[in-house]
Image 1 (cartoon, helix red, strand yellow):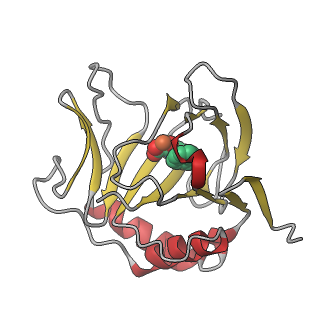
Image 2: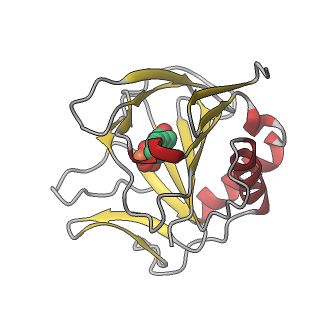
Length: 206
Ligand code: MD3
Ligand code: FE
């Protein structure tokens, strides 16, 4: 058994430090994308401003406003298409998916979530993608956070999973539609990210 890799459930694989294999390229590419695509606090359909600041790259980007949650080919902030997904992002996501048994994962969307201290993501399901048989690959960078992994109902009890810099999780199979969230991020320091946590989620959305 590979201690570097642990199965949390069938179709869910935690790959500790998997994003550090080509860390310099990954961080350089991320810096470029964020410089081109300002991180913004979007508004939920219910009218709340999210504590997480977001950007996207790839053909499709996940957006939220008073009209709802959806994917769009245009960045509502700039009115232009999103930046192309860097090769380092695509390679990381498809290699991670492959480790978890998903051989042909080609993401067309990468959501970039930035958490400052106290930012959180309340329990939700990811249901805006077309094909739920495709996994979601998540990459944690910067300061650590506690991930909440729930059930099929919002009220189901949750499992707490600490995620740290470089951890990659592949979420597939029947777990794909479970409720999940991020606890308020505690104030701490990471040499490359300061007090921020950044999470990349790769999806085949369209
Ligand atoms: C489990 N992001 O962007 S990533 C999201 O850390 C989101 O920013 C969190 O939830 C973050 O939608 C968690 C891990 C994740 C993403 C999608 C999932 C876990 C998932 C979908 C189904 C089950
Ligand atoms: Fe989610």
